[in-house]
Amino acid sequence: MSEDRFTQLDRMRYTKNTASSRLALLAIVFDVLFFISLYKSDVGTYYYTALIGASIIYNLVFMLATFLCSEGVKNYNANYSYVMFGLGVGQIIRIFILPMQAHQAVVANQQVMGDAQFIRMVIYLVASALCLFAGAIINLNKSRALKAHIASLQA
Amino acid sequence: MAELQLQHLDKIYDNNVQAVYDFNLDVKDGELIVLVGPSGCGKSTTLRMVAGLEDISNGHLLLDGRDITQAPAKDRDLAMVFQNYALYGHMTIYENMAFSLTLRKENPNVIHKKVLAAAEILDLTAQLNKKPAQLSGGQRQRVAMGRAIVRNPKVFLFDEPLSNLDAKLRSATRREILLLHKRLNATILYVTHDQTEALTLADRIVCMSMGHVQQIGTPLELYDRPNNIFVATFIGLPPMNMFNTVFEDGKLKGQGFEVELTQEAKALLAKWNGKPITLGVRPEDIAEGGSIPVRVTTNENLGMTTLVHGHMGKNSHVTAKFRDWASYREGDVVNVHFNKMHFFDPETTNAIRKEGN
View (cartoon, chains in turn brown, green):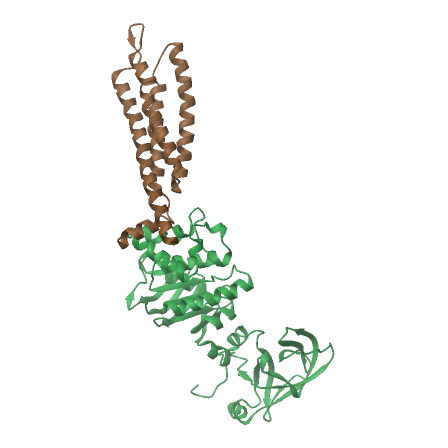
């Protein structure tokens, strides 16, 4: 192992995993942009109102969980990577529920959600998911490397 | 490391109050200079002028021959350690120590090596992941020093760094600073009001009062050959006893007591016959046995030594420091003699010395 690589690994003993943490926070930002776009649209029927209620609750849970992950990954805790993977998959699945259903719905001969708004919301969700996946992979790699480094120091 | 020259420095505030008058000092490479004096004497102001935290009203400041009088603090290549540590509470010790280098955008690997090296010197390696609130006062002060060390500055400035520590910790940290100085061979300007710190740490001491430099010299010079009454009474604990006397018939005569002088002292005071002289005697230069009676008022046993307070003659208070344990009572009379005396001109307060000295 080169000296630079050793120092790089050794630095992790004293510095936080800010890259993963910031990516998790960025995922929250994209999620916020997503629900701002969603809630300003008039989705009309009771069916969509109920769905929006569930979406609000999920958003709250998502933001709380992602924030906890952003704090957890700071300390190279690998378990939070798995949670971030799960949250990322959740963001992808969401594309097929509310924005897609609203996009396909027609009320009184009018489209509930226009194409532009739909595409924008899909982009926000995908971006949010990508941030979570990237943060989780970075944290997983770093936590494994740090674990191996500490083991080599103790050996 | 570097040489620092302070040439004719004055500090005059906007309200025309002058805090420092004509301060001159050459700090040699690797030297530890201690600025000592009572509160308000201008020592911290001088240090802050050197650091660039106060404007210099008059004079010049040279670092390795380069004039840095007008240079902003960040460009002076000096590191200051403050009394209150000035650590960032939300950062870990590692982050605190690395912070200044991070701001300079140095290579993170280089920063890491410097921080670990400084932590090793200061025995802080095990504390690097902790926050300042989790450390003791002494450890926090070491972190503050570490933050200065990682910058590898030309000169270290210490502003009363031990004032917030208790007596035991102060003594231990003082030793650490001394070891650090020897290890790094650093040029250090150190401000304190504690003369014990000054005497134990300094290569040279600058004694200040009311914005004026009273004396610059080695600790022994200031202790043994004080320039004036201020230095004589400020350096040494307990302070030097001062007696108002008149030199007559080869003796110093005070109110109700007389002191015999050596031939050397008589020769020194030959021109002062019939004139008033302030006699200075350190408590540790007073010994039991002799012809000067002291009426004891209080007796303080300190274990290895005993401080005896009393009166000589009618009204001259005297403190004597006797070796060993002594148990005098109020009213006891002890005969003493003076092993060493200092003579001062009461008018100018300057020491009376042989011409040319």
